[in-house]
Amino acid sequence: MEKPRLRFWQIWNMSFGFLGIQFGWGLQMANMSAIYEYLGAKPDDIPILWLAAPLTGLIVQPIVGNMSDRTWTRMGRRSPYFLVGAILASLALLAMPMSSSLWMAAGLLWVLDGSVNVSMQPFRALVPDMLPEEQRTAGFSMQSLFIGLGSIVASALPWILANVFGVGAAGGGGIPATVRLAFYIGAAAFFAAVMWTIFTIREYPPEDLEAFRRAQHESRGIGNAVRDIFDAIVKMPATMRQLAWAQIFTWLGLFAMWLYFPVAVAHNVFDAPNETSPLYQQGVEWAGVCFAMYSVVTFFFAFALPRIADRLGPRLTHTLCLVAGAVGLLSVGLIHNKFLLLASMLGVGVVWSSTVSMPYAIVEGSLPPARVGVYMGIFNSFIVLPEICAALGFGWVMRTLLDNNRMAAVLCGGACFLVAAVLMQRVHEPTAEASGVASKITAPGH
Image (cartoon, rainbow, N blue to C red; front, side):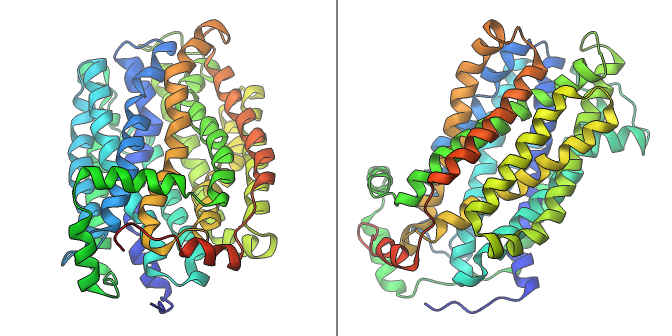
């Protein structure tokens, strides 16, 4: 079906739910390591406590992608998954700051991350569902814009509550009141933003609804879903295979930053002696401001990114953004002034804006239209696989190689960005001919 061009506000509405999703991610990334330390975790304990997040994504994303490809209801194809994920994630955000033990927090992170993935993965597939090919880079960039905007507010929210609204630091279970209130606000924002998208878009039905229903009936069951996922992996387009290695090192770098940047700032820049010191909370809150800073850059750079990609091509654009991110993150090791940390976040914002849009713009042209959901789920596995490896192995690295130096872990993240930039040179962007070949790969039963 030839899809009509959508107006700016239509693309805005279909992407708006990402604002809420990023509230969930932003609060999680800026605060979970500190929450773990408030509850008694040591630096080398933190990676394994984060294991729930990527492991859940590895399981959930391909399955939800496959299921959403084969779903059609009165709500549409992707919208039912937006709704279920929003309800569960909002409940997890409400419960998280009530955690009274490490394993309670880790278990709630499992629920939160799984629920966010249920909503997020179909949002990625919505872009090729709804937009003609010439608007898809703009669609992914609009998602990048909302990711940046959501992160700005979510990351800085505890600092804003403490320094603008005067919320006190006291909180039961060791978790400050500012963090608790931020999670409650995040739950409301997540649900409201996703509901906005659900109520303001109308998804296109399958071209042949009767044939779609027959295929849907024939492919029911977990066995068929698993077979379809493995079949898609075997037939994975070459562009996706090449891009996978760059994705792996990109997300190793991001994961190292998210795990240790907030606590590194508290200990290495604010010189907090322990987690009970007021300096520790101030450092973690300032790290949230730094995350908000890179999200501001992400937000504004998202406007320029489509034009840069049109001029340089998505591959070169993403390569240069990775180098900028590496410079920004490596510079953190030389900084001891909290305000200079904001300057280092410029490069991080550039790489984050590109990471949440350019790889998807590169790979979507090689995907068969009937299997976009399952392939987006598989592609996102290249995000969670390196995170699982880091969660399982980085604790050993921290103990034996880095002497539990949190700042050294952040610098490892910058080095990973440089490796990813080199690996991007192996990626061949899909041509029209390659896309035509890919489109002939059809799902079983379609």
